[in-house]
Amino acid sequence: MKRLFASGAAAAALFGASGAFAQDCGTVQLAEMNWASAGVMAYIDKIILEEGYGCEVELVTGDTVPTFTSMSEKSEPDMAPELWINAFRVALDAAVDEGNLIYGGEVLNEGGVEGWWIPTSLAEEHGITTVAQALEHPELFPGAEDSSKGAFFGCPAGWGCQINNANLFKAYGLEEAGFELVDPGSAAGLDGSIARAFERGEGWFGYYWAPTAILGKYDMTLLDFEQPFDEEMWNTCITNPECLDPKPTSWVRSEVFTVVTDDFAEKAGVAMDYVKARTWDNKTASVVLAWMADNQGSNEDGAYYFLENHQDVWSAWVSDEVAAKINDAL
Image (cartoon, rainbow, N blue to C red):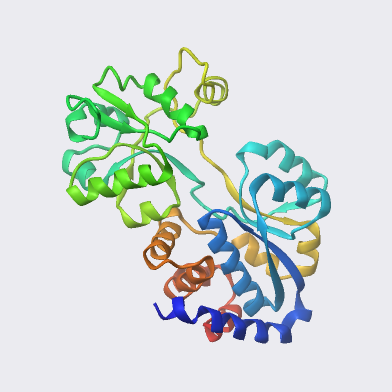
């Protein structure tokens, strides 16, 4: 908790120290995206690039498409620490081929994980690891308006994943198996349904994604769809609200990379090695996000919490010399 209250002073000290080394790397601009995992990573990058490599880092507000467009057309900002690239992979590859942008590391080394989850304790008690096995036990998943049915919690109305879940609910025959599709109403409603189930020691079955604070706080198991990913089915039907005959498929894997401009690669020098090496798994990210939620921590607080408590992870991204500089600054 000391970092939560001391991070402001520590940040000031870091800025003062970084000025002495700025000529080594120059000024770089990083996008601080408007979701938690990316925001934390932006501050982790800021601290490591300043303290370890002598960069002078400026954070700017970012969002997926506007940041990508600005980077490819204007070379600003220099770096997007966390881009979920599925929606514009073709355009990104074209920008890379043209020499405007460069892939860094796959910042989420498992990708962004979406799918259907149940509590791990329930999975272990009943030997449930697949969707098919969960469908055999609607009685384990209360929460439906009709108490004779099991509840499956989908996405709130208005979210893109609401369509995906509704079509997969149909494709896997959940209604026939005795389940009701529940609209949680909002993000808070979805989170609340999980928290309530854990508080009551009840089962829960539904859609969620990682990395998130909820999955850092509550131990959940991602169920196996036991189907290969069918790209054509996903693109033409699962994502289409008018699809009449959806077929089973696994959830699409979201690729999540760091992307930098060619200008950044030139001026950052050896720091580019860090950008390519820097990666973490969803469990680690979720633990950091859960700590932030419990302590009302900012992105900056989360970054310091991670650096102070997960040196085994980040020290693998940098040389021993750089690691020593960072440790001295913490």
